[in-house]
Length: 161
Image (cartoon, rainbow, N blue to C red; front, side, top):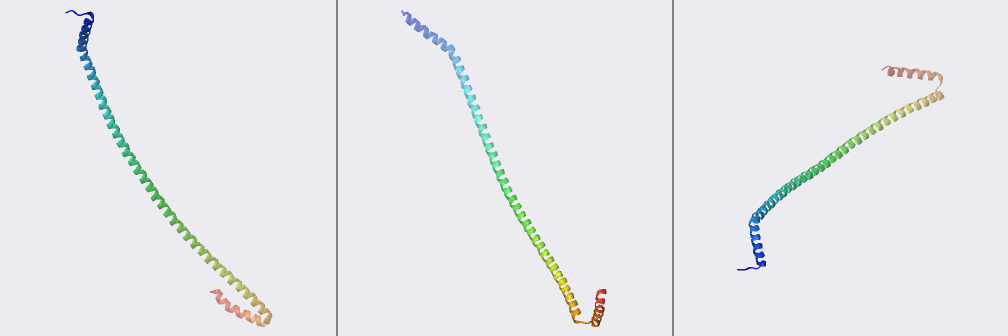
């Protein structure tokens, strides 16, 4: 059988490809297997990273929930404290107002007492002066001396007591 040059080139090329395929197939399969293992490792790593990310998300959501609850508790406690302070301030101001009212009443009573004393004092002075004028204008000297002596005798025992 006679083949021309093109056929021999084609046969040589096919044999060359077959030999290369035989030797290279192991290398290609090895490279592909290594690539497959690498991809599997990357998938496992991605899966574990995803799980870690989900765990971190869960933890951060729990933390956020705790922080929200703490904030609500702080706000509630602040409102309760403010209410207590307000009630206490109202109580203290009521007490102060009552005390001031009592002091004002006591001052009024003291002023009334002073006014009554002053009125009695002025009235006494007016009575004494009017008595002096009456005695001077209506009673003679002898009767005047008798009246003073009699009055002195009546007043002395009350002064000594």
